[in-house]
Amino acid sequence: MKITTKAVFDIETMQMESWEGFEYAGPTERAGGGPSQQQKDAAASQANLTNQTAQTSRDMLGIYKNQYAKIDPFATNRMQNGLPYYKSLTDFASGTNAKAFAPAYAALNRRLSSTGPMPSGFGMQARSDLDAARARDFDSRLQDNLALNETAKDNAAAMLTGQQGMANPLGWTGATMQGNQSIMQAPLASPGLGGLIGGIAGGALSAIPKF
Image 1 (cartoon, rainbow, N blue to C red):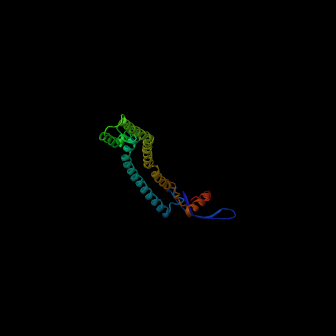
Image 2: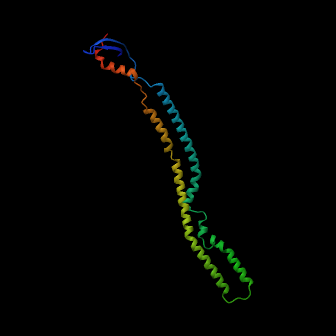
Image 3: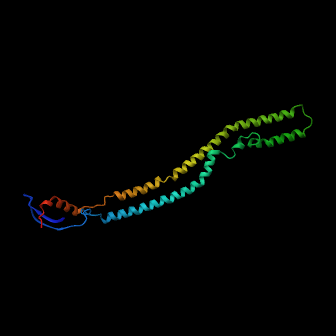
């Protein structure tokens, strides 16, 4: 095809008076001009930043996978089974309540054994009173212990959910994908004067003399 470098028209008749140009047989996708050096530099800088972001996302994902592997066994067990000492909290016969009152029973038995003759049933009543005090203490703490166990399970579930949220790579990879898209969608073509001349040449193509 012919490329126009100079065309002179009569402004009244729009007839071409002279024409200068040359034959061109190369690709046409750059006929309107290519990317400027600034655009090339910007694209290279964006590509470099995108690569850094991608590497950061891979590093962070590795860190969180490692952390999650450590936390998952503990949190899963706690969520399913609750407090490891929960049975002791709720075991009236030999749990924490029984152990807490053991010194009181021992002291009472020592007192009863060291005293002389006492009224009939005195020792039985003293032990009964201590049993009642122990039962009241167990009952008053039982509701709190139940709530404490459920709270431990809820906290473990939240721990797993939090780790899953932090390990989700969408936040990191999203920045990488946005960077890639900005490169692909950047308007790198810069028409300039060549594009303008090409437009004039296209409009006046039919008037160009054939050689």
